[in-house]
Image (cartoon, rainbow, N blue to C red):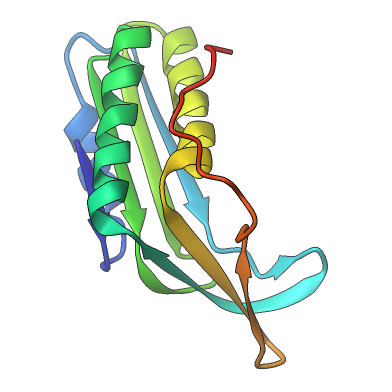
Length: 147
């Protein structure tokens, strides 16, 4: 299951989506808005995306993870809009019969999501300035290798 949202991420709902009697492992990763980057105080973050392509890439990631690992559940949620410090910006949840597969799939999903999904972050600094982060990154349509 994949989605983009302007609302706070409901972690209980995300976990419920991947719950399965066949799962011996459930993994939830949350990316959160931190209060500084490279020592520079952050006031808030803004996320924007190319929604049609972002949803397509998230669906491709889910399908690829299910192909690579024996997952019983997989949910990817990314928050859009303005986020205050401490708010969850992204949730990756997977379940599988065994923990090694859950950890490997979860790590691959968040790392690959950050590389290929067209979602952009703007850091809003406490001094009133802001900066788009990663504007020089190149979106890669490939999945690379299983690490």
